[in-house]
Image (tube, rainbow, N blue to C red; front, side, top):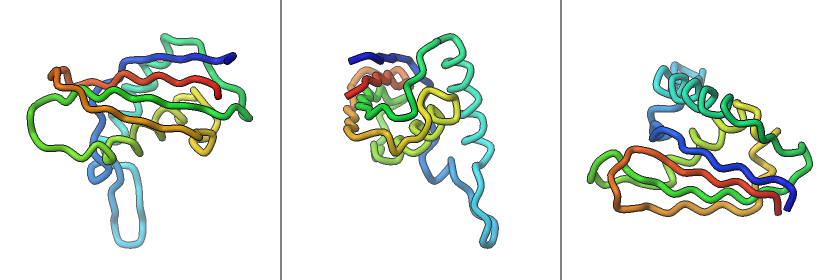
Length: 117
C-alpha cells in the first residue's frame, strides 16, 4: 500500500438534500454546496492525493448527529463526490471496496479512511 488517507468530516446531507431538481435540470443544492465547501476546507489541511490509476478501498464510520432513523446509503453520494471534488482522488470509479458502519456515539461526523488496494 502506497497511499493512506484518514479524515474526519461533518455529517453530510442526504442524497435528497444534496441533489436538487428544477424541471429537467439537476444541480447540487445549497446544503450540498455547503457540505462540499466544508469537505474542501477539511481536505486542504491534508496533503494526500491518490494517483489517477489507484484502485481504492474506502471505509466510513458514521456517527449520527441524533437518534433518528437514517439510511446509511444516503450518505455515500455526497461524501464520495465531495472527496473527489476536493481532489483526494481523480474519480470515484477508482473505488473497488466500500464499507460504511453506523456507530452508536452521537457526534454528527464521519471518519473516512482511504487506502490503495
